[in-house]
Length: 543
Ligand code: ADP
Image 1: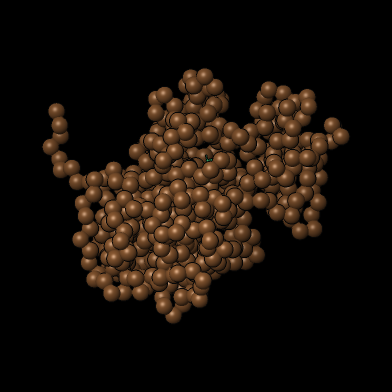
Image 2: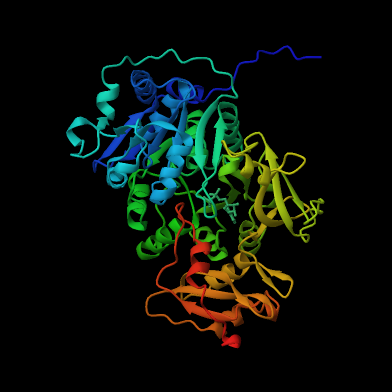
C-alpha cells in the first residue's frame, strides 16, 4: 500500500530559500580576492542568486548544462552553487591545484559551457589559453573596476547579474536531477566524476546537520577551511543555511596567522579542514598562547588526524571531531563525537577514541570484506576492505563505465579503497588506503598508526611513513620526517616511542629528513609522490 503524503521533490534551492526567509539576518562574510572583507546576509544572497540565474540563462545555459567554477570560498561561489543547480544546470567545481593536464581533461570530460573564475586563478587559464575548449565562455568573479587586463575573452560577474530582477521562477525539478559535479583528485589514473543529485545533496545536508550540532546550529559562525572546490566544502554551504549558521569564508588566506585573525575578529565558533591546515593554526595558537576566543569545535578529516593534534586542541578546550569520508560520499561517512553517556571517560581515553574515525552517520551503511568479498565481523579485530552504501553515495562515476565497474561490488556497494576494522560499538578504524599499506613478509603494517606515534615526538613538524621495496620482505616501512627547526631526532628515539605499541618487525627500517612533504591537490600528504621520490632509495640492510 502506498503512503498518502505529498511527494515534493527535494531541491537545493529550497535550502537557501528557507534561510532567506527564516534566517534572513545570518550572513556570509568573505575575504575577497579584491582584498577587502565583504558581508552579505542570506536574504540578499537569495536575491543575487536569482539575478545570477537570469544571467546564466542570458548566457544560454539550459537545464543539464555543466557550469564550472575555479574559485576560493566566498559569497559569489556560494551564489553560483545555488543559481546553477536551482535553474536545473550542474555546478562543476574545479580544483585549481590540479595539473594543467588534469584540468583540461576534466573541462573536456564534463563538457563545461561556462567557467567562472576568481581573479587569483586567471593566470592559470591564461597559461592554458590555446588548449581551452573553443566554445567555453569565461566569467571573472569580480566587478568591472577589478576586472583584469587579459588576453582571454573575460566577461564580468557583477555586470552579468546587475541588469536582472531579484526574483526568479525556480523550476520544480525531479529530485534525481544532477546538481553538482566534483572530480576526485586522481592521484592514480584520470580524475573521476561524482555527480550529486538534488536529493543526495539535500539529504546529506540534513544528515550532517543532525550529526554535527556542535558546529551546525542557529547563530553558529562556521569557517569552512576545506575549499568549496573540494567536495562542496564537505556540505557546509548546504547545511549552514538550513540551521541558521553564518559562513565565514577565508578566500585564499589559509595560513595559520590569517586563519587565527579571521577566527578572532569574526567570533568563529567552528571550523572544518584537513590535518595539514591545522598544523598552521596549531603553531599560531602556540605562539599566541591561547586559541581564538569563540572557537568551540574543529572538524578534522580528509586524512587521519594525528593523535597529538587531537590532544593539543582538546587541551586548549577546543572540541575535536574526527571525520572520515570521500568525494564519492558527498563526503561525510563517519564522525567521532563522544556520546554524552560516556562523558566521564578520561582525557587519554577520549583522545584515543577520537583518534579512530568515528561512527557512521545516519544514511550511510558500512561493511568490511575479505579478498573474496566475504563479509568480515565488526569485532574491532578483523581488517578488510571497506565498502559503503547510502543516500548520498555515488551509484557510478560520471561517464566512466570502466571506473564504475571497478568500484561497485555485486551487491551495488561502493568500494572505498580503504582498509579498516569496525568495533562492535561501531567505531571505524581506517588502517590505510589499500595502496598505502606496507606489506612486509606477508603481514600488513599500517602507515597511519606509525605516523600517529611519530607525530607525538616533540621534534617533528610533520611526517609520513612509506613502503620501500625489500628483496626478502617485499616492503619495509621508512619514516620520512620534516623536523622542527634546529632539531635532529634519531631513529632510535622513534623506535623507543613506537615499541610500546608495535612489534619489533613493524618498526621503520630507516629515518629520512625532508624539508617539506609533497601535498596533493586537496592539501593531503601525497604518498604517491613520496614513493616516486624515494623510488631509488635503498634500505640500510640491503646497501
Ligand atoms: P582525494 O584524496 O583523492 O581527493 P577524497 O578527498 O575523496 O579523495 O579522499 C578520500 C580518502 O581520504 C578516503 O578514502 C581515505 O583514504 C582518506 N581519508 C579521509 N578522511 C580520513 C580520515 N579521517 N582518516 C583516514 N583517512 C581518511
